[in-house]
Every structure is written in structure tokens, then in C-alpha cells.
Image 1 (spheres, helix red, strand yellow):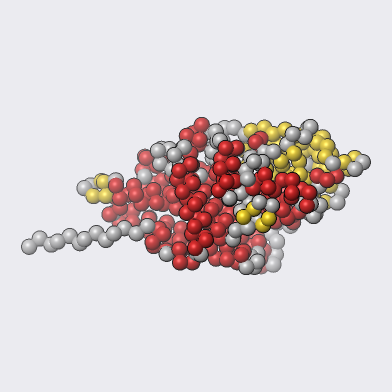
Image 2 (spheres, rainbow, N blue to C red; image 1 turned 90 degrees about the horizontal axis):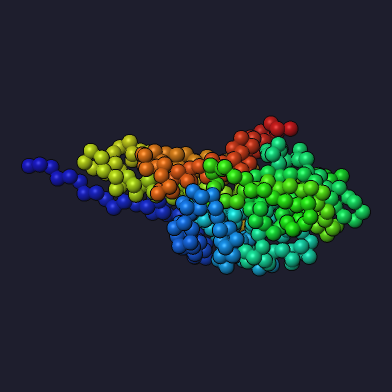
Length: 397
């Protein structure tokens, strides 16, 4: 008698395989669901067009994200939700499952611009800027990186000099997300007392922002050059508690934490797409998901995704407990961006020729992750941060 073929077992989703939900609170799962629904309804239907045209309705989205409560959601007071670090991370994951550009808008607004004002600003600065920024009525950007000083911001050339009671800022900043749509820029500059931060309304004379075009990554994101040509500011523009490079670096650490989760959103969307595609695509009389080489690839990628997700949740718990250290954030950023990019690249391979089409999200995520791997600290710089923590020796200075 002919043998009976084995019955195929029901396929598991990535969520089923790792069962991370039992590690999350009810509030954390609820926040994830809210953001996931927003991305499904508001972002996913149009994001391929935004990416292709290089245009993003950023101001409109900012107001919607403000109503959603995710702008500065991990901050307390001034209209901010005061959510847990894990809730914020899960929001970043779901936003980046839509597109890295959407998560970048939220990260720069909340973890860089708003965090800088919240952490280092005066009460007047907080009251003036944080409530409208939390609502998405005002957009912020963060001016640290310069064209010649990316990994080494301590060598920045932008200067702030005293003129009577005023400050006069001169210099340029490069690769600034939200730059030419921002209402306020947090600008870091060299002073006689070291690096300090300034709150710069973008309608100030001498301030201009030029959009960067011809990008092949993060196309659904606003990226700009900031030019400060003798920008005169009152003494009250100084972030009074910002002193030295540690201030902007602490802001970057906040943003990096969001990327630890966010990169997995892009990776998970790629891998889920590859799984669905492999189940539907037939070659040689059966779905390609039934072939050993495809299953090995998917299993390897799923393993890295799950490890990254468990790491992200662990780091979130450390952050909520006030115990997280910068080198631990570097571990998460290095591992999860590197593995997310690998997942995107190999998921694209599963899709074959269709993998390069914007009809599927994979190529879009893949080229976005090339930028995510680099910004907020390159892979090399995070490797050196981890190496310094382990050996006690700095390989940079």
C-alpha cells in the first residue's frame, strides 16, 4: 500500500514561537495593540508611496501621533504619558514595522529634542515647549552631528559665543531628522565653558534648514542640513543644566534604546513577509516553505529575531528599574540592528525577484536598516564601547 504523507502541522507565528507576551504587562500589550492598529490603518497603506516619492506628511502624522500619546511617552509631566520603558520600546517596534522613518520621527521628537529639554532645560523652557511637542503641535529636531564630525562630536566646529547677555551661534549640522519642518532645534555648540545645548526657535534670524535629497534610504523621513549664520539668542536659550559632551550623549542613549526595539519591528515585518511568501510560492510542485534550505534560513533568522526581542525586553526592564548602563544599550543597539539587517537581506532572498519590489516591504526595510545600523552610533563605535567596558581600555582616546 502507498504510504500516507504526514499531515502538515499548523504553522506558528513568530509571536507563538517565542511566547514573549507572558513577559509583558497588560498595559504594555495594550499600548502595543494601539500602535499596531495605527500603523496598520494609517501608515501601511501609503508608506510605499511615501518612500517612492520621498515625501512624508510629517506634520499631519505628528499631530496624529500626539493624539495617540507616543510623543515623549516615556517622559513625565508636561503632557507626557510617563509610560514604562518597555511600553515605549514596544511602540517603537510597531512604528518601525511600518517604516524606520516613522519611528525616527517619534524618536527624534521624544528621545532627543523633548528629552533634552526635559532633562536639561529650565522650567520656562519645559512649560513652553514640551506640551505642544507632546501633542504634535510643535516639531523638534536635534542638532549634534556635523558633516566632518559624526562619531567624534567632541570635535564639533559649531560655536556659541557671548555678546553681552546674548549668545551668537555659528556653524552647520548635518543629517538632521525633522530639520526643515521643525519649530524648535536643540543645537549643541562649543563654548568657552565646553559643549552646551541651546533651544533655537527655527524662525530665528540666521537659522535655515535645507532638505537633503537623493537619499536611497529613509526616504519616508525628513532629513536636513541646519545652517546657523550668526544666530542671536537670549541668555534664556541656553539649556541651563547642560554641561559637556555627556549631556548630548545621554540624549543619544535614550534614542538608541528605542532603536533596540525598533529595528526588530522592521526585521519582524520582513521575516513575517518571507514566511507568508514561502508558504504561497510554489516551485517543483510544492510551496518553497517545504524545502529544507528555505526552512533552515527561516529558522536561523527567527532564532536571531527571538534572541533580539528577549534582549530588548530585558534591557527595558533594566531601564525601568533605573539600572541600565550605556554599554548595555550599546549591546542592544549593536546586536539588534546588525541582526535586523541580516534578517532583511535574507528575507529579500526568499522572495527572489519579488524581493526588490515595493509591492512588498522587504527591500524598503532593508535599505532603511542600512541607515539605522549607522546612526546613533555606528556598529564599530558600539563594539568599542563594549570593548572598553570589558577591558577598561579606550581604543578611541
